[in-house]
Image 1 (spheres, rainbow, N blue to C red):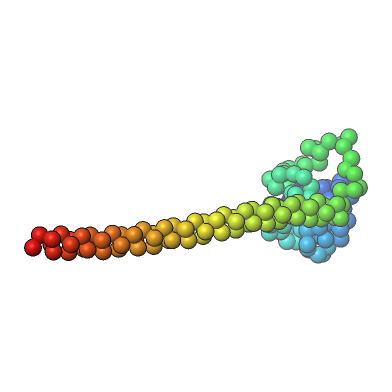
Image 2 (cartoon, rainbow, N blue to C red):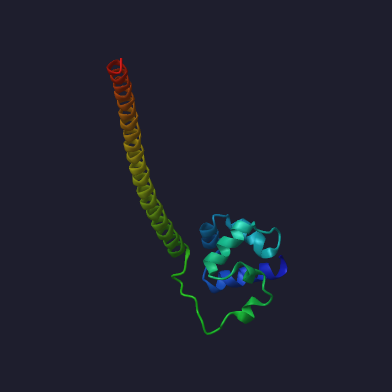
Length: 153
């Protein structure tokens, strides 16, 4: 993953108007670590590669593509607004939306649990009521048996 990756990283960083420092901030790595990746001194983890692909808007496999500069359209210029702040803002917005959605789903699930608990209480009350009804009927049967036995004597 070294040769093409190193060259591609530098090309993509420069085409997207990132400095080592600004891209390092976006990726949560130091600029010296990023420099080490570009010169082939070390290789990034898979997670860092995923973040790089996200930042550059490419597939992670394209980071290793030979001659990536041939595949980049020279007529396309990357807007300088695609920087660390914009990237982090979009990530924050995405994560906030996901958080809100999960909180909403959590509230719905909590309400469903509460509803099921109420239903369970009602079922238990019905069972208790029917049990008492059965006992009452059993006592009535005993009383009727005693009455019939007394009457037949």
